[in-house]
Length: 367
Ligand code: MG
Image 1: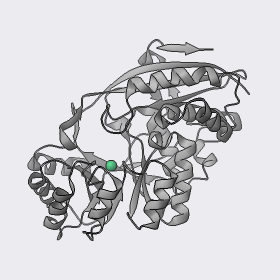
Image 2: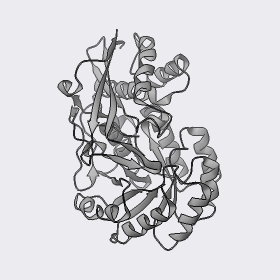
Image 3: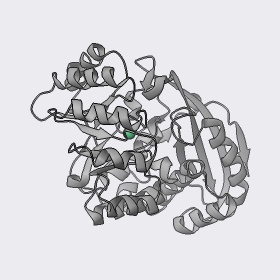
Image 4: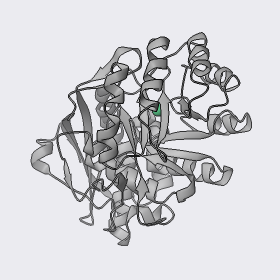
């Protein structure tokens, strides 16, 4: 099988809640998502999606995804999309770095491999564990009382894991954690995700001030070393996210016992092939994971569901259903949250069919 055509689409994804706010006053109102459609000489078509969390979350931005795909696409014409490791090596020798640029292309090739073999991607990634898997709900940064006020509604939607966006003024963040914690019921899990927003002295104040609260601390500071200094100060369960973007740092962090949970985002690692490699390593090392992406619509939610559902249940800390946060649906067949849980499709490939009217005209086509 050979890749014959690569088409790229841009789609805006507004939010039901109007905006999504996190550390340092960062905010997105409409996510800029990129969808890739790969056609083959055998008539099988696959789709992928990449959606950075704005331009200042990770070293990734929407226009950069499209610019990079435009560089890679000519090199993919004539390549076999079902030979994924080889295809990824080819992408890496064509464009050094920029893992997020490769994510949607790799995802679309997994969609093709699944359709070609009649298997859902979940099976190809190792096998399906259980009937469904658990989701977390991010609580966008607002005043402490407003964030606490969101918990009951999200719990009514079935969520039991709440990821609080902190990483702002430390005193307000302490109030945020206390206010939300007061709303928790037995069985709920609270994560305070600072998204790199605290300096070390600020993080040190927060973890000491919430010492009596059952809360996970996620990515308090900018660098791995800064986070590790806070890890040593606190006995809260500790999550690393932004700094864990490849196998070398994952292995180093593990050897230093620098975290209890890692967050694996598909595009941060460069696609399903590399995120799966990190996932499998974490399984072997006994590290629990949140499996998700930086953001996305129906196609990314489908891809997340296949990687999450093929992760041993006891090692999957949580996952995300981004398609329930946004107002625009870009594909049929994407998994839909039920009682705070998600199930990967059993259809071949990712199990989605893009809504071409929602995607509009291609931004560019390579054939
Ligand atoms: Mg995080």
